[in-house]
Length: 198
Image (tube, rainbow, N blue to C red):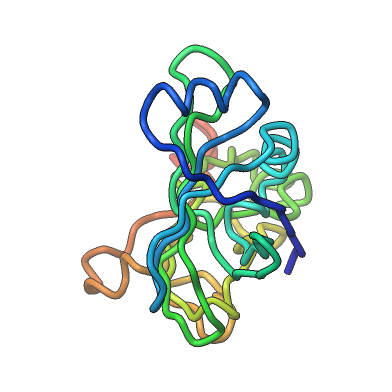
C-alpha cells in the first residue's frame, strides 16, 4: 500500500469568487466529509495535489490529510477538473477508518502479456474489456491494483470478473449484484482465419 500524506489548510470562504482567487494563488478548494464529524472545507496546494495525482495508486489508497494540527485518514471520492485545461477545480475526500466499508475504483494490471502462450504460440491477440473494476472492502484492505497474470492464457480464453484472484477481504461490486454481472475482463482472440477455423 502506498503512503500518501497531504497538508491542507482550513478554508473559511466559499463561493465561486473565493474559489477563483484560491486557484489563482496555487490553491485547490476541497471538502472532507463522512464519519461522525461535520464536513470541513479545506485548501490544498495545486502543485502538491497534481504531483500526487500523477501516481495511479493515489486514486485507490488511504491518504493521510494533515489539517490544522490534526490528521484525518481519507480516500479520494471525486475530482472536478477544468473541461479544457489540466486544472483540478475541486476535490472531495471521504473520511475512513480501518473498519469503514467502502466502494472504490481499482485499476487492473495485466502481467506477462508479452509471454502469453496464446499470443506467442497461438498467434492470438489480447483484448482488454476492462482496465479497472469497482470493489467493496474495508479501507485497510483497499488494494492499489488487481493483478491478472496472462502468461498461461491460451487462444480463445476469456477471463471474467469471477476468475480474478481478489485479495482477502475484497469483493467485486458487480458480482455482489449476482452472477449475471460476471463481465469479461480480458480475452485472447484467435487469429483471423487461422487456427480458430481449424
